[in-house]
Length: 136
Image (tube, rainbow, N blue to C red):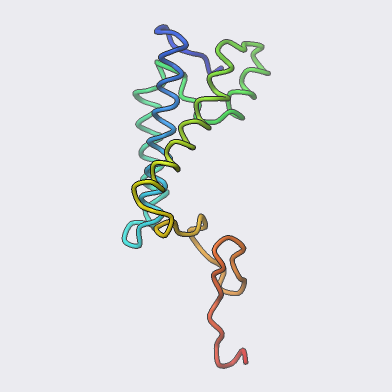
């Protein structure tokens, strides 16, 4: 199935893609950076994407991912509104990240990894596994 703008046109499709991506990224940032809710990040994202598929698809085709749009366009040969799907999702994500930083502050940004290895240091946040008495 090719990703193309709905009957309302490209402008609405662009705005819809920015909004759904902004909301998705905002949810990921809020939930994954919460000690209480971080284990529920996948469930929250899955429910949000299912909601988008149900309600947003008629407006923009619900891409949120340039690779998804690229693959379906190449196979179908239909490149209608292609620019939307390469600009709107990154813009929505950047706006969400910037908004999160403005509202929460840099100190509230945790590591992007939800689960750290128990045996290796994290290259993103510097997490160090605890050294056991047997490991000394």
